[in-house]
Image: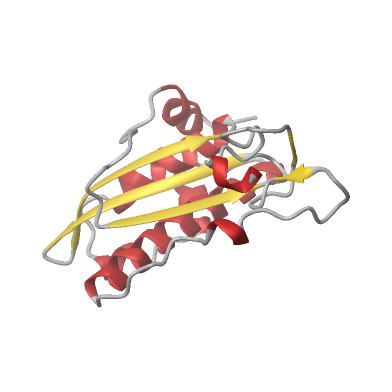
Length: 172
């Protein structure tokens, strides 16, 4: 049973959307349940000026993303770092035990977005994965997603399980 707060954030999610000019991006997923979260932050004067999310998953995952963005918006980076899976679950007035992993995803995505922002600020640049590293036939002749290890059909552009962009190069 979900709390009224969870249902409100699920039915009326706040801060939904992609941020093309984000200062930091955090992306997490759980291949077991299929939840995928992207958190985007815009930082000004060491404060999260704007935050958005794109989540593909269950109602709890969407509610967690929405609540997380509300909790982080306007906070300093230092204060946003203190947001935990427990504090998100508490703000939602609890989650069923089998959905607590969703709050972990949300807190993890925020921490990754903050790390991405700090890395960019320090001049560290993420190198994109090499195409040849993305695809292996580790289990016979079946194509598998390099992100979640799901069986793939030939020439798929996106994984049907985790939603990651596979690109045509993995089938070369």
